[in-house]
Length: 294
Image: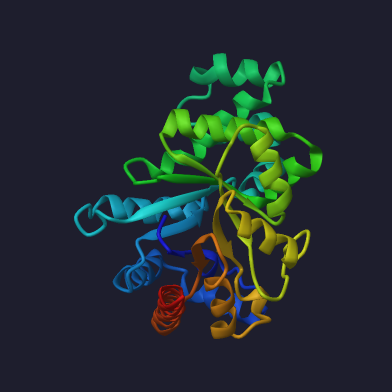
């Protein structure tokens, strides 16, 4: 994985600092062209991996990327699923069966042997596989080397003790899409234990890691201990602690942690993108020099 990964929160008005900024971002990115322009800025800054939800508008972005294969030949997308709001709204409006009919790829009746019977027999693993296929349809022809399950689902399954679904997700992503499974969570220590017990070694886990202990279930000290053990490939997200930490201080902290393979961030302006990339690279270089001197 690349050291720096670009996220999509700003494109869909997700801002942990202020509702006013969320509204401003919603207006700024109301057109797909604005999203593409910002992605191009990230690419120019040296970032070639985009981690995004399966929001309906991402399908439009994928279509633009497919139409320019030369320009985006090195560009990778890490899909994160499910986009919970989409399914919550659909179930409210259409029910579970109606949602399956709406979102399974291809003709629902053509999937009856797998999907319909699975629904009747409560074979939820097979339903999950169909929903993964539905979410991945928009990424056809796009390089998606890692596919993530969102924290809203990861942590729900953890809390319910339904570990087999996490293992099933990992197995299906590997077999069907020849991709690495990734897991987003607010509880890195517990998830890692569950995955290892399920036979998944050195998993890719994206978790909140920041100096302010923001959304770090189990506490910062436990996270630092897990990181020191090197048992998983970690992507650090929410590194600014929801806006509680100045950017330079936040990036210095996370850049100096052991075994953080990647840092995920989102930004809406060229200046913020370039400043963040430059700051991470500065602290990475500083750490390398310190290691050499030792």
